[in-house]
Length: 112
Image 1 (cartoon, rainbow, N blue to C red):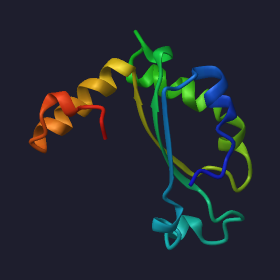
Image 2 (cartoon, rainbow, N blue to C red; image 1 turned 30 degrees about the vertical axis):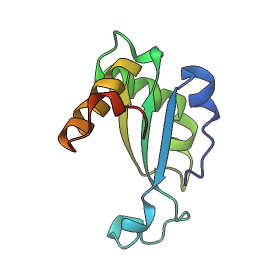
Image 3 (cartoon, rainbow, N blue to C red; image 1 turned 90 degrees about the vertical axis):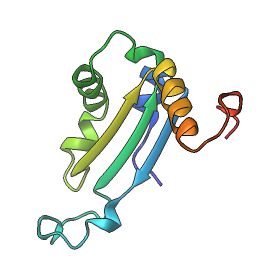
């Protein structure tokens, strides 16, 4: 799971969804990671927030990067960060699409 503090994200964006994944183990063998002072360097975040409304994907990503600036600049901090940033409406449409592809009725969307 996510080892860095999610506090800057939760305080600034008040996300309705915040999923975090530590993908570091899949990259530990990479040459760039040899001699790294940290074994937790690669993360993936899924963030749903009203704060992303009317913002382009690049603007959303810049916002998240600004919130995690210290972690990104810290020695042994984050080496790679993959982001999925979406509004609640975008998340709802994505879930509906995914459920439709699985053959689940639309009425079941959001029930897991």
